[in-house]
Image (tube, rainbow, N blue to C red; front, side):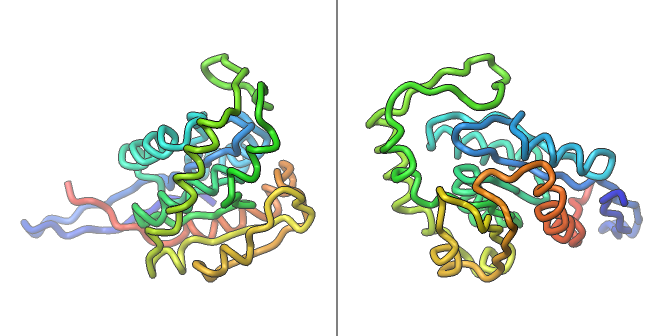
Length: 223
């Protein structure tokens, strides 16, 4: 099944035309990952020829990452956001702000708790497009995340309550935020996996939920 949205539109001049566009999914990876991580590649493969899947590398610093995602959304106009871990932390805020449906995979809503024990030099676990694999977690980075996470739910809306969904791994040992998620949103799902889903888990559990989201009608702009 190819996820196109087609409808006839009557313009103010009485003329009709067909609006045809392939659905677009924007995937936001986790903190140690990139747009070439296992979940990203699995999503691209699952929707190949059916929907366009964008899997960009995200900036390390949170304010820069949110600006990047916001501008990308305004330019690409994705129909659905999907994220994992830190990417879901970002997706929740952007989805609320821009009224975009989102699937939050194992969202890590307390990134400071994740980063503090990991201060020091690291390498990304999948290749980055710019070739830079080394980075450092320091106090400045942690303070930037602390400021953002303090206000992460400020933009919650009634639309988001129904259109931002969560999916949580039953073997996740890093993020345990389903109760916090349910304080703000309605739809929560489980899969029998860990914090970072495997390709098979993406195909079995994530893809069907994303298909439900992208199959919903989306307005077409007039020419």
